[in-house]
Amino acid sequence: MTVLRRVAGAYAVLSAAAVGANFVLTPLYDDGATGYPVWSILNWFMAPSVVLVVAASLAWKLRPAEGGGDARDALRRIEANVLFYASTVLGLWFFWNWFGDLMARDDAALWAFIDPLFAVAVGACGVRLWRGPDAIP
Image: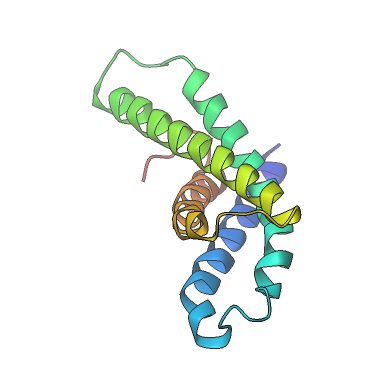
């Protein structure tokens, strides 16, 4: 199970890095006249990452506290809740806008919120998956 968790974590970190880098570099190489072909391809790799981060953060949120209620348990609970709600918002925005993009009716301004949130939430989830379920940065 550790190998599968690490592979999922690596995929999440790599996709978060790719989205973050492309978000910053897109204005340098594409003015929008081409229809953003890199994003059209990258969205297909983003979708599994969004599902992964929602599922993993839900599992961490629903896991009962194992300790006696110390500061580490409170920090774990806060981290799990923030990651879960951020990933839920990310999932709703991403799939709504991506499906709209596939049908030529997306909201281009919403991608400016989705892509940075993706890089942060998926990156954090990937690091946590890589380190282990009990890791607290």
